[in-house]
Amino acid sequence: MKKDIHNLSKSTLIEEIPLACSDELAAVEFFERRRWGKNPCCVRCGSVDVHKMVDSKTGQRNKRYLWRCHDCKAQYTVRIGAVYEESRLPMRHWAYAFWRASTSKKGVAALEIQRDCQISYKSALFLMNRIRFAMAPENPIAEKLTGTVECDETYLGGKPRYKGISKRGRGTKKVPVFAAVERRGRIRRQVVADVCGKTLKGAIREMVDKQARIFTDDLPSYIGIGADFAGGHHTVAHSTKEYVRGDIHTNTAESSFALLKRGIMGIYHSVSKEYLHRYLWQFDFLWNARKLNDGERTEVAIKLAEGKRLMYKSPEAA
Ligand SMILES: [Zn+2]
Image (cartoon, rainbow, N blue to C red; front, side, top):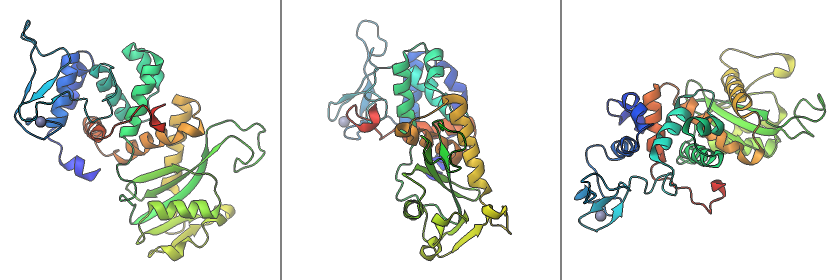
């Protein structure tokens, strides 16, 4: 995410967004400025010899907000090649949903978008699912966490049938979620099948750089992970109520889970296992961009939407 932060021009997003949320032409031009700045170019061939198509009767912009390329003759709109490509929903609703999803620390429910934009619940869900997809890490393999990395696991969602049946949620519909978080840095979370050693150690190897120091509690599943990391594996013994030893603790990971649970339970009430990863994308994005102001964070989310398309046939398109 760093590269996007530094490339931002002085953001006027917060000044522009109210109009972009209510007027369709303003919304289209808002997204065009985010995408092309002062140098609009062809989405097919990259040529800058392009123009906005104009309605011959009215002299206004073409109703579909088309552009035309003089070199390859392509006609296109700002939607092409981004998460909104397959959508006919007005761009002003996209502007509103991006803004809300990027600035509501506890997340925003499709129901709110439905109410505020006066669209169907299905459309609101469509918007939010694509915005969450835009917020997903671009290249999770390349973006490994570095430095001191706290690792922890928790259970989310569902309601246990029998209270107290198991502290770890066994026998319930709760979904295990694993988090790796850099001290003062980025977070990555994922839904895991279980919390056994093979699964959790596999998740750590996938998300964390080999040079890192790994901090966990004393859950036996983590035993042996130190062998794979140059900084070693350091634990605090939660089982004997030891929570901090020197700089060793997992408080950052735990507070990230607390925030996630408040968000998911407060706004979404419950999230099924099947869809939970999308909410993790959204909450991880909010965490990773927490030092940006609201305008910058919205700007980054919109940037991430470019080059990402969610096809109807994709399993994510539900
Ligand atoms: Zn072209």
